[in-house]
Each structure stands twice: as structure tokens, then as C-alpha cells.
Image (cartoon, rainbow, N blue to C red; front, side, top):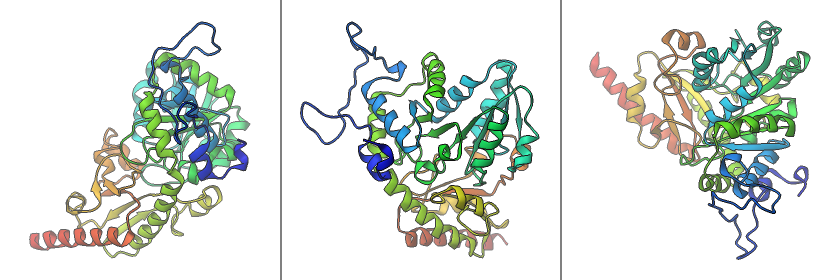
Length: 390
């Protein structure tokens, strides 16, 4: 197959699929072996070398979806992130990171990089001058995440790619929130694309995995470290992930539509103080999002007005689940201050604009009328509690 001639859903369904030559089944067979022959063969296979049949097949699919040459599958999103960063950074090097990134990535940098002799700088904003101001003579990598977690800030991909090329740096992106359905950073010049495949690629809240896609040269460099760190994924989970990716295009596009409707509903709601969604014309980065995204995604965040208790609101929901993680077919909410960004200090959260009452909303594939009804009944319960307290 020539991937450029295949549609997105066709690539999701067929590209990189293993053929069941014995029984002619319609899906990829699962190879559970951890011991393979080594004599008179071209490839010595071992799970930690990322080259079992199922690992290789799925990597081809993800590379095709991200318009990259090659890919690797990891045991978690953080395994993918840490391996990619350390593959291009050594003692004495410096990295520039976007102002707001996933809490786990932030903790990796501020808690671990000093041990490796790697220095770092966070930008003060999302503009070209913010990144340029942080580049040093020993800078090797620029790392971004767009849309960002949890405020859905949008960073201009081409701008970051141009700055990286100007200074001979490696540009990396966490593309988890967008997914390959909505955004292909390679097309804008970004070098390394990273995913928590636990999220939209998995899509059913039952898989933990990570993925990285880039050029053959970059992926060989990442692989050389990856095989030593041992962050590979079991073949059964690889097989489940391939199954899930088959429906990713359909799922994510449905979530895009639902999130757009829910963002508009929340934006117009009298008890909502703020809504963060790049699909809203009121979003400060809306025009940038339109230029580089094919859809605005299934993630949004909102803040209740100050006199509404965010915790009580979430506990009052019946259909929408208060739950950690995101991107499943079921709608979920959480408080970033208690979960994804809990390890950040209160001062750092405030600096990043993450209020204690902020609620991150992962919109699923349910009917939006049902989601709205659930939010309304929860709001009514909180109003009654508030009125009784007066």
C-alpha cells in the first residue's frame, strides 16, 4: 500500500495489518511468544527490541497515520516522552519547553534532569519571541504540547519548526490531545511526534501505551536508548491497541462534534465563568488552531462561577464520570489540581493559570442532549446546597 493514496479510516483499518496466512482470519493474528529463533534468520526478535511481529506491524500503522517514516510503541506515554527526550539530550545540554505542559512531563524535567546534568528553560508564553528568548548556545531540543493540558492553549507548529531549524534543534511535540485525526505535526516541520496512546489511540479506557514517530534516523537514535531502558509494550496490549486504532477516526470525529456543541452550551451558561476550547471563536488561539488542525478535538476545560463548588458538582453527575485519564468513548471530568497537575506546587499552578475550580472535560460519544441534561441536574443540586447554606 502507498499510504498517501489511502484515506485516514482505511489506514486505521488496514495499514500495517498482519496477514493470517494459516486460517485467513480478517484480523491480525496475535503472536505472544517471547522466545524466537536466532539461527539462519534475518531478524533476531525479542520484545524489548520492539521488533516482535505485532509490535512492528502496529508501528507501521502509527507511522503512516502521523505521516512519518517510522514509529515505536512504548509501555506508557511517559516512557515514550522520557526515552525520546533523553535520546537527544546529554550532560551539558539545554532544552526549551513550552510554558504549559503535561504535569508528568514537567515533573520529569524539574525532578530528574538535574541528575543528568541537563539544564532547561520554560517559555513565558507561546509566541516566537518567547521561544527565541530561551534558546542558548547549548540548546538541543524544543518541546511543545498543543493543544495543551488542561487549558487548551495552541502553539503555532510551523513557528516552532522554523525556530528549531534556524538554531539546528530537534523539535518535539506531545500530540496526544489532538490525535493524528486532528493534527499531523510532521506536515508543519516538527521532527518528533509523541503520543500517550492510552488516550485517543486506545480510546476505551482500558489500555496503557505510548508511541513515537519520526524519521528513520531519529527513530534509530530513540531505539538505541529504548532497548536499554526497556519500556516496551506487551504483545497482547499491542494487539488490543491495533484493534482500537481501527475505529479512531470515527470515534474522534464524533468527539470533535460533541465537544464543539458542549463548548458552545457551556460558554452560554449563566453559571460558567470561563470555557477553554480552541473551536470557540472567543478562544485567543482560534485562528492558529484553524490553520493547523483538521478538527478542534474532544477536550475542553471550564470553570464554574466562584460560588459553585466544583467537587460537589462533579460528585452530583450521574452520566458523566469523574475519572482520571481522558479520551475514552465515555465522557469524563476531573480536577487537574487533584490529578494531572497535583504534583505541581500551588504557586506553579497559579502561574500556569490552573485554578482550583478548573474542570477538565473529556467529551465522549454520547448524545449531547443527554450530557447537557446531566450537567443541568448536577448544577441544580449544587444550587440547592448553596441556597441551604445561605
